[in-house]
Image (cartoon, rainbow, N blue to C red; front, side, top):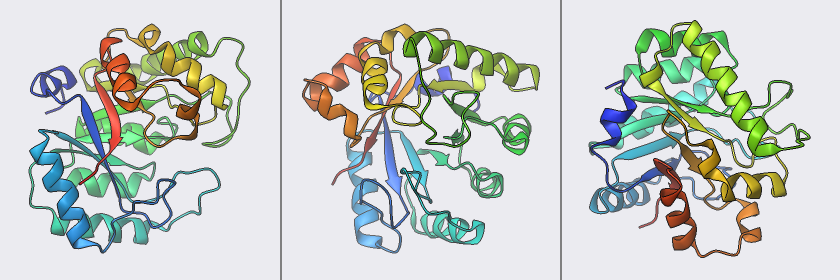
Length: 247
């Protein structure tokens, strides 16, 4: 199913659950080779009527250590082999080979945190017709966590996303495949991420909006409880909130 709106119409949880298969994720909740823990998380997600699960096999925290393609695929295969549940799975990767392997194994969503900068990732999105999550990345950034200076972060992020959307569509990606994510915590200082999250409704346009703030440092600067912050996002038009799964 490549149409985001159709897929979202079947969801009531508003949650994109996170499964980390890396051993050094910033949240410290990796479940590679931890069968019982992984199954508990998936069963809990099913009980909570969560339909969307985002699977990451390599850390993207600041200063992360690169993982070989072989290791990332090994972790992904572990998940594929152990999972017995039916969800709409998203692959959280900027490696085209790993992403292609995920798509070939029934993953429906490509979540490229690097912002679809690689031609191979764009071609894969076009050819597979998968739903994609376009994560914001400043067009002049040199790396995932290269801190950029913003005069008006909400306005600039919106402009960057709109420009990238036009570029992707011109290359063959269809509008209904695209959801957007402001990339909170990526290439932005704490105050920029806070500003984006508090004004997230300004980014709501014609495309589904996805945000991820779970366990990130900047939320300590927002005087809201977890439930109030989630409600703020939903009330602002956010389609899915990326949340770490719990038992």
